[in-house]
Length: 441
Image 1 (cartoon, rainbow, N blue to C red):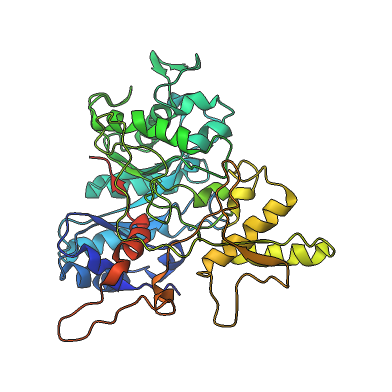
Image 2: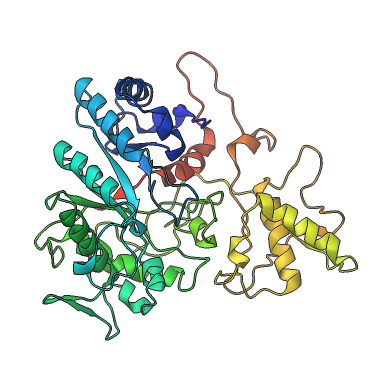
């Protein structure tokens, strides 16, 4: 069961930000009739439209056919999309479209030219049915692309990921020259949907980004370089070799690092954000596409916990006990930066242990009802000196709202019509916005 706090959506009441609501893959099997689709739309869409929240799109599943991200293939996605689409039309859900986002692995593997592209043989008929639904409803095909992974998968030079490719590597195909991953993948999808019988279906980029940790080449400098050229490109009307002269809609993934995200395919999954969870930008990016050398706005009103860190006390008499405590810490906290390719992957043994302990300490707001979170079976101590080493930062986290009362900082507002505001608005809202795909316009 998925539990959602719908109070989060109140922040977008009357705003201009368009919201996409996703029907999770695990719930597709529960929406296998028009009646079930009507009930879902009423519960998840209508109730919020009444409150003037701009919900413009429904994603029916999320990359349901991707073996890269999922152990299961959610084969009900196309049928559920049909039912959702019917319910939209028959119940007057104006200005809402329904579609499904797909990862690049729905394309057949081993394609070395866009003209060779097609959907995977095991998916071909499903994708033919899928694009037929999109064609009939004038809905877009949504593709998710992560250039750094696509290039690594094809064993291409990482330079091919950047639109200002500084290498000599390029790909020629029927008179067209491809100098970057994005145009290659975009036109591969154009070819695939054309072969599926829908050559004019609009393509949008549902997710594109560059991780800053947890993967070879994943760092702030490369992320900054990628977006510096990518945003002006999609804002222009240059288009691609197969679709020249068009403006491309693209959504950046993501606004904020998600330290509880899945890492089943790699540590980088927690490091897509333009911002750290504390509201500090990780690199320069100009969302206007005007090539300005600027950092985005820093979050205001963020409250940090005291500048103190939990570190290993150096006791190595029982390494089994140390290992148990490190595993305990990293089961709850985010230790992905110490994995190969990460910004903390070169730490010494003692520094690794300290990093794990501190992440747990900060994750639990430096506090526990049952005692200190910096104990670890007498293996840790609290220090006031920052133990950060080189590129590896030992963070002090922001104060979570649920801990605010413990620290004596929360104010309770009373009286008719009053709402709890206080100093935590930005700290709460910023992580929320990581679920929103920001359109480059």
